[in-house]
Length: 129
Image (cartoon, rainbow, N blue to C red; front, side, top):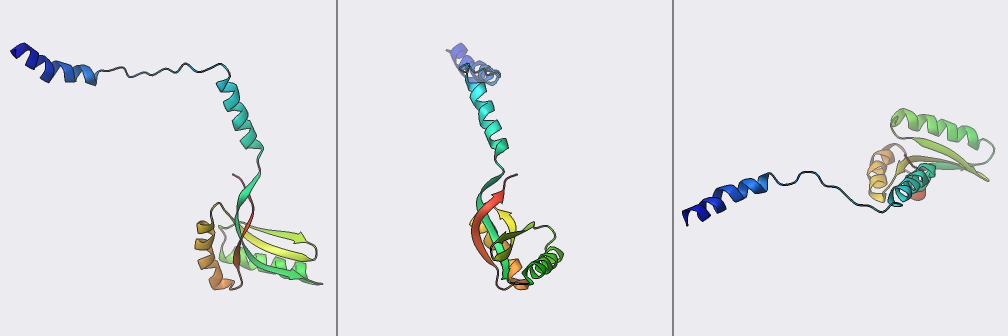
């Protein structure tokens, strides 16, 4: 009886501590190929759905200069946030940020709206890193 109690209390827990540490997987042959295809497909993606903040939009004769001035002013105030100028006839637009979620965009909008009160969040294609 003493031997069985000794075995249960001391030897059995020690055996559990030194259990097998290496695990091996028997995967099908095509799994590595499929995984590589998946990784290659994501490398080709340059843009994904996300959110940006539109600072301003101008149309007219001097609109390009106005947008460039606004972009320069923005980059001085917020040097860490990327911006892009786009042209869709007849408007030049200044949009900033590459936000994956709407929450991130609204958090940045709180700071940006102090300097650019007309700014708003919109859904856009953002750069994928």
